[in-house]
Length: 68
Image (cartoon, rainbow, N blue to C red):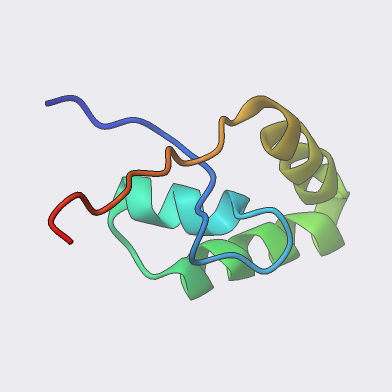
């Protein structure tokens, strides 16, 4: 099964981009958020990168629990 990059529907602060990237890379979402903040403060590229990712990344698919 291949891994896919989605915006997180559960681990999100704004749009779920950092939570989705963290889940894809299997790391803590706080680390990804800190990287985005450093990029945003340093060269403003973090803000642009986040906006582009929020527009391009698909939402995480919703699966109903059919066991109930």
